[in-house]
Length: 183
Image (cartoon, rainbow, N blue to C red; front, side, top):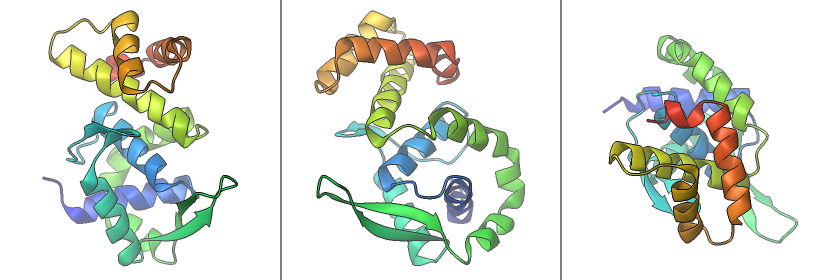
């Protein structure tokens, strides 16, 4: 398993490059880095309410805040729900510098993830990451991972997304080469 300091370095680098992410968005970014770009972070994910989930990622985000590698602030959304915003701390740069060699190896993957997924809402990231998760799982098991098969199964897990939207996002991910890389 990868050392905690490298994990905190990756979390800090993501916050440095994309401040104001929420915890759920951070989880999806890390999932995409690991699954699509093969960054060896070593988290285990399972499918959950908001897509791929890892309790270890949540623990490491909390540790990053506890160690003052990042700041985690409570924010109130217009809906009245509370969430978290991750921003750089005074020590973020020090944490990144400590793991600079490891981070530099994957810097382009981090930049690509932010470029492709950085403007998506948590809901959109939920859909994208769930499609990637199902596609990769089906490919790993040598099951049919066609647009129809994956979309139908994503719809069963995520009934609040329309089938046309799921298929559209499948095609977007496919056209960007994301699905192929996820296998």
